[in-house]
Length: 131
Image (cartoon, rainbow, N blue to C red; front, side, top):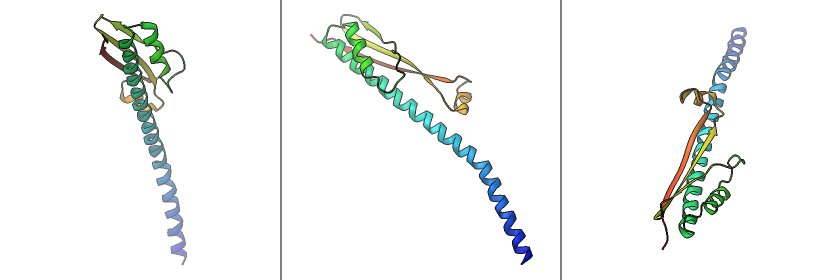
């Protein structure tokens, strides 16, 4: 019986060591998933804002303030400071470009992309003017 007790005690110690090794890795993977999910969401929001801004511009002869206001109104969930919106109208079409710099939370992801703690995202849309 004494041998069984000792064997059981080492198994508990082994479980503790395994948990101590795997929990930080699981946490790191979850944080990476969190960052990736944020990047996908932000890219979707930026692309939609650029598309809707270009659409508003096509209906109003490329009115830059209106395009910028439309794009800003649709950037829900991004940093509350105004995101620069570049509008370029040729008289035939309107192009809206929205650059955004997303801050990365997970250190391993920033190491994987060259040591930066940010990711540059861009939404761009071009539409022909309505006649």
